[in-house]
Amino acid sequence: MNVKTFDLGDVVEMKKQHPCGTNEWKIIRIGADVRIKCVGCQHSVMIPRREFEKKMKKVLVKAQPASEE
Image 1: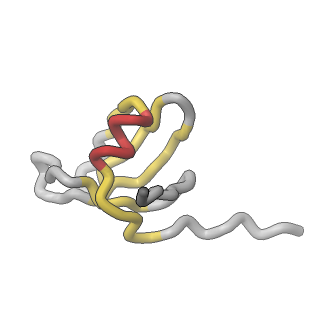
Image 2: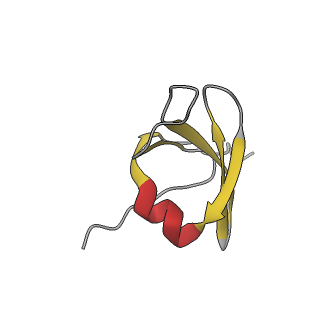
């Protein structure tokens, strides 16, 4: 089974395109639900985690790890 891993701040590609013309989304909240923000028009959507995992194609840009001081 192919397990998709994603983290807060990642930019992911979804299977379906957003009406604004892009299918790139930034993950801005992770929990039982996942909140994602459209990279094109900044519209945000909250969807259940299971649904998100089904609709996500791949991670395009990994989030930059927080620098430890």
